[in-house]
Image (cartoon, rainbow over the protein chains, first blue to last red):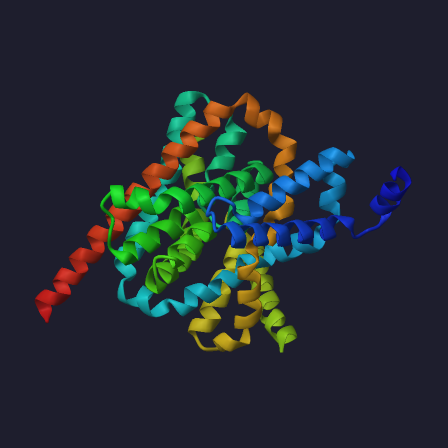
Length: 234
Length: 121
């Protein structure tokens, strides 16, 4: 058995095979249970961590085998232009409220994180990594890296932000008396990015497409705002 | 042809890299690439169908692409444990404030615009 394992870990493909397998399981788990919180990325990551710990493999060996996915990762922000382009008509009609809402919301969430974190004495690299937590992952990763944060930690916070938003976001919006479908979709996409968008589509087509538009725009706006706020507050 | 779609996506990313180097902006190159792709779509230099299928495929499997990064959290378990409250509170408050401000500002501004348009009609 040990021999078999060591032969397996010499192959150059075990890492990505593991990623794909865990992802497929994660997708099936979500489809069967229909529980919002059981996002495929959460299930898959936990499965892989348990597997790596159990077999004594380190993270670096695993991640080196996933360079192909890392390459697509860098492309994935570029293709977000497609949902943005599809919603260009709504964007043209409501460009003022949309830009106003996304900019105000993105700025508010960044400033809150910085001020509360500073007041609590949170470590600087952690705080910087929290700044892009509402961005879609490809953008968050780039923003965190360019500001000197810890990208892997940022990705974890992005996933948590998305999952908690998909689970609690719609109820929170009712509580806040936000009931206009454009505003609801826009908020889910701005703060809870792609995972919030999947939830927004369950409320309807307009809510969902507003959310995907907001996810792309909020990512861009945060990419512009983050270095400015970092320069002001740090 | 999927290869052609990938070509346009790579061209956009490439343009983003050049803009990033050339302008020295603190914005990630792939965000500039997204702006470039949006621009050439809006200017009708390329059609939506020239990039749509490959883009939708990538977007529908975003979660897969980020799994290796999310697994990277195993390197930071100690950091999480040692700073749990100092991470959780700023993060949670930032999320709640973000929901409130985005939702309220957008809704107020949309209602104001709809009212103006009804007034004009």
